[in-house]
Length: 228
Length: 258
Image (tube, rainbow over all chains, first blue to last red; front, side, top):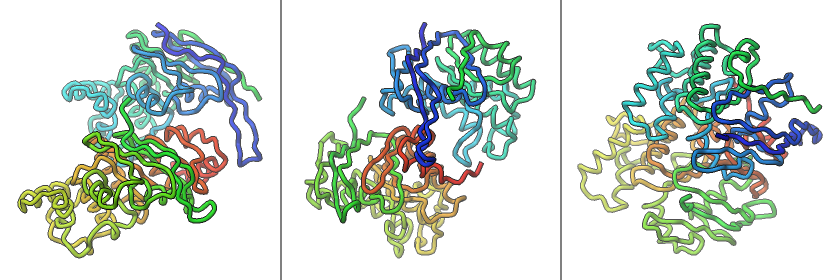
């Protein structure tokens, strides 16, 4: 089943405060991703991998073309969609694992990770089970669960981030170097979680600098070349 | 999609060229937080006063849907209708809590007054609801008989929020609600606000010049300059991929803490 269809997408950053400098990043790019695939974007630094991934989440806008997200019910073009439709997609269909955790101060790890389930009206006892399970799998000690992650180590924060994004079992998962600050053991856990997501039919698109991990999880590679 | 709770068209209020608001159109949906950002003098506070019926525009319309599904044009409503809406449908949280509180009556009285305004008469009920709301905004209910004059700025601001939320408003207007507060107090207040807004499903229009506040609270953003909306969209999209020159400048001037 088709999950993402990108058609003729272009993106140029215009830096108005730096003399109107134009930075073309993507030119007429097209590809698609099906359920059960793990597509890895690769290419040298600055070639637009992160930009493309952020466009698939509606975080960056495309200048032209279309980015169609296929939910179980409908097809939504992120380039034309109203912000509300993008928010609905993010709640139910699209998950993004970023490199950094950006959250409200004071909110505990438990609340952060359970929030996506609460917003989707999942039953409290099921929330309890699923949060407990994913925090254990990502080796986050119980002593941290009631604490806010602001003071955690980089690797711990990153695992909270992964738990929060993967807990929903979304049909589409976008990963921007999710293992950058993890040790080998936890990297292996993330690789397993990714394989399981694929096995249940999720479509994944990611950026992974770790060659070993990339070879282990990618079902297809898309090579991007810098335009400038 | 459901209908907007508030829908403004062609809204104009001119004090001088580029001073005020010019041809503003916007919609606010139930349960969403709309942020209005821009520098001082960009017209954001004027816009908020127009939208909340505190001032009449020179031109334009503002359709508001009441809880009885009645549509009222705020620009044509009488002052008594606007006062009624202010008590039953709106909450207004001022930048300076002194403008939104009565400092010389007790904290409980400040909350209770709003309840009496919508017809509550039972003293015991009012008092118990007031202390429940103090707990909700993390003020010790033991201070229910103290005057807010003696509260810290952060506590006054939280009391103002309780005073506004107690009547179950459907639309809240906030003008720089964390303006005069310490950063640590701000975080706590923002956290409280975000929790309450999500829990109660109310719509919020918040004016701020603090991009951190906007990012934490707002679902969508409008960027204003010289009385006009120059950019709008999803909050993270506007802040991470700003298109207008002014928005790029605004985002580039945020101090990076992390």
